[in-house]
Image (tube, rainbow, N blue to C red; front, side, top):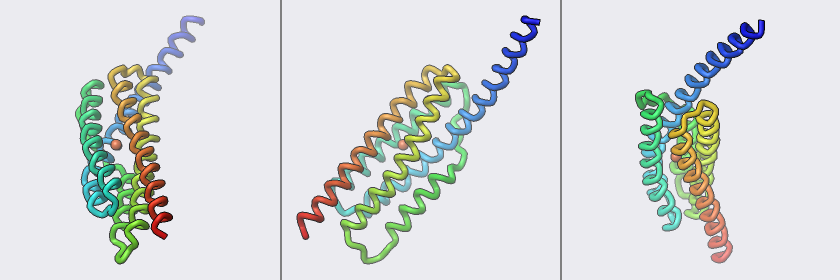
Amino acid sequence: MNNNGNTNAGMGLHSNSQGFDKAFLEQLQDVYDAETQLLTALPKMQQAASSQKLKQIFQQHLQVTERQRQRLEQVFQAIGQPAEAKTCPAMRGLIKEAEEIMQKQGQDPEVLDAALIGAAQKVEHYEIATYGTLRTWAQVLGHQQAITALEATLEEEKQADQLLTSAAEHNINQRAAES
Ligand SMILES: [Fe+2]
């Protein structure tokens, strides 16, 4: 009776862990696509930005994003799966919002910068949520290498968010000084 119970519990855990492995893989494929989409959006945002500080942030984050994409390939490898992308509709929507901001004609450059910062922070917050989830799942599943890699990216996204916050403050201060 006891043995039976234990066996069943064991089987339950096993099938749950398989479901989690699949969910983990799907989230990885989603964020792999999200980072790829961002690689094409960031240069456009860099070009549209007026302030040198903001241009520099976008330029730096482009390099960081390239590294993060490679880091995801290492995670796929660590769990023995091919690096495949699955369309991330959320990132598509976030980038569409950024494009709408850039397409508006005759904008005050400081207002445009503020709107670009806002769009970029939405992207960062989305990525922070995704990498936070992936990191936790990697811990639950015991994917040691993945934990380290996902943690590193999570920290980089948080840093990017903070840089954007300081750029927003700088932008507003500049505007106040000019008026
Ligand atoms: Fe990223």
